[in-house]
Amino acid sequence: MSPVHGVAILGSTGSIGLSTLDVIARHPDRYRVRALVARASWRKIVEQALACRPDVVILTEPVAAAHAREALRAAGSPARVESGAEAVAAAVAAADVDTVMAAIVGAAGLMPTLAAVRAGKRVLLANKEALVMAGRLLIDEVRPAGAALIPIDSEHNAIFQCMPARYLPGEPAPGVTHVILTASGGPFRTTDPARLSRVTPDEACAHPKWKMGRKISVDSATLMNKGLEVIEATWLFGLPEAEVEVVVHPQSVVHSLVRYVDGSVLAQLGAPDMRTPIAQALAWPERIESGVAALDLAAVARLDFEAPDHARFPSLGLARAAARAGGTAPAVLNAANEVAVQAFLDGGLNFTAITTVIDEVLQRLESRAVRTLDDVLDADAAARRLAAATIETARGALV
Image 1 (cartoon, rainbow, N blue to C red):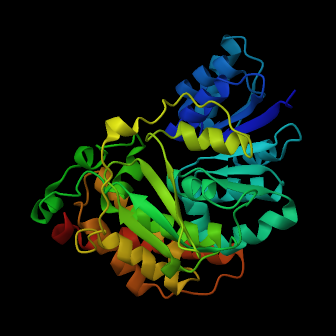
Image 2 (image 1 turned 135 degrees about the vertical axis):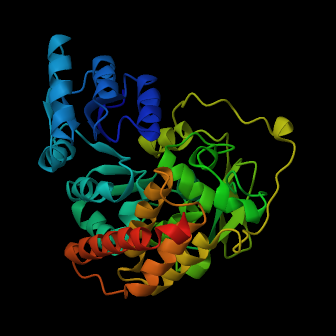
């Protein structure tokens, strides 16, 4: 009989968290949710806690935590409700937790992910920003801590599935020459470029294949998501930026590919449903049922591929340049993007100006070597300040 694995879900109220809970609910004999972590969605996390009965519920916003505590007490739930970064670190380090789903969006996910790695857990990495910001620091912690880092992004998980048996991310794989990330092209793949400056946040978030949060949906629409994935792949698979290719694949059936020295190219195919990589990572090296329907190739009928349009999607080029520059450049790229995307979602910036802001910040902040976590955090803070100032001073020209 398989042991029962204790799971902490960081970002439980987001799309990845919801999919993780769905997969876990299908295997009550294998997994038990020990901790649920979110920022402020207290009503949703209360519903989750009543359904899966974790030991602890953590909301990083104290007011939201107070609401959740009152609601769970009224419902008779024994779950503890806590708040703050220390509570999150304690939850991922708990002795009865062996698996951590790291799905907090953006830079906010860096410290909890690092805490899980340092605690020696199996970390299911859905937060790409942690590796983008502090790839070397994070990777260097994995092996000494006895942790395992398994990617959840559909593309990186597909690559992981196509790697040699028993391979774990963090170093080059024998015989692999390139990895190939697929991109759907987002909602504006064929849109007249002249109209892009006028697209709305709702249009940008209407992804043709995937159901995702608003921030990652905008990143997909600009192709910045793919740029961040290029940087993430260099750290996960020990490859230089030039050996991480990107190809647009509108059907989103081939999730990524691996090219071997003998000329073989292995691909992972499946329906566009995040429960597949989540189930694979939870059970690795075994396989479990995910709730995803089997792929019907006859119904798919065709698979198309094309090179990305760098003129339409300059974010991809900016991310590649940051990957080549190294040091703090990827952290600056990520921070500027988060600020610009939020400004777009708030109606204070037009769609094409997102990359204008990012480019300006990258040009004005020199990349510096990363020796400690403080180097990363300082670069992140400086980039956020400069991005906000750039948006404010140029608002009239960019809106």
